[in-house]
Amino acid sequence: MKKTFLRIICTLLAATLVMFSLAGCGAESKDASVEKIKKAGVLKVGVKEATLGFGYLNPATGEYEGLEIDLAKKMAEDLGVKVEFTSVNASTRGQLLDSGEIDMVAATFTITDERRLSYDFSTSYYTDYVSVLVRNDSGIETLEDFEGKTIAVVTGSVSKKNVESNTSAKINFVEYPEYSDCKLAVASGTADGFAVDVSVLSIWVDDDCHIISSRFAPQDYGVATKKGCEFTKYVEEKITGWLSDGTIAGLIDKNGIK
Image (cartoon, rainbow, N blue to C red):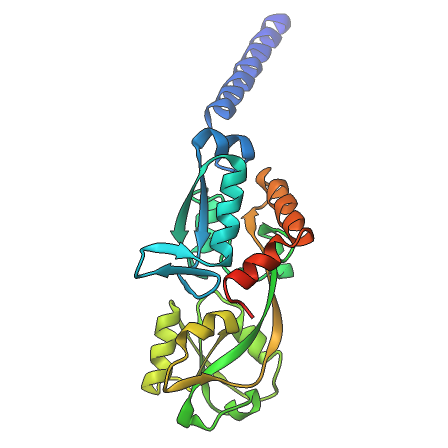
């Protein structure tokens, strides 16, 4: 009886292991890898569409342009595949990367210790700074001038934290899903300022608004990939190589970035 019972238990355990093994083989990983990207024939990249010099969807041509667009195109060319761009913002870039819908993000994505817990980042390819857009008639020129006033920030960005870390002024914050909403809040008087990286703010400067003189909180931009994925190593090799040989410096000049 004991032998029969043991044989039954062993048979059940073996069957269970087989089922788990088959399940693992049938579930294809969505993590990016050089091999998978080459097999698919396309590199899927999350980029900005309204950040001049970095990621901008030109309405006149219907084409993306900017430093990050050029970096993605060079990677795709090196891999021998096409490149497919998806417009992302601070709220969607992480979700699309996590789901495997895109292979990497090159979208003025600031490297932080907190974000490194969720994503892999390449070496920084550009360092920007944070500032605030205000109306010309506001009389505001420094962060201290925002005492008791309101600053608009995009949901999911680190702009609020960066402002608070660089002033003792007591400031109110209001969050919006898009940069355009923040600019509208300033234009309508709902907010006194709109804080984010200077590279982003530049497109929203017009005859009625300007960027204050204060520059703070250096922002190191890196290419983000899914945490622990095999594609991370490839991206890092390309970025560090292009930094060393002057390729990225040339692309920065080409795209008019100061």
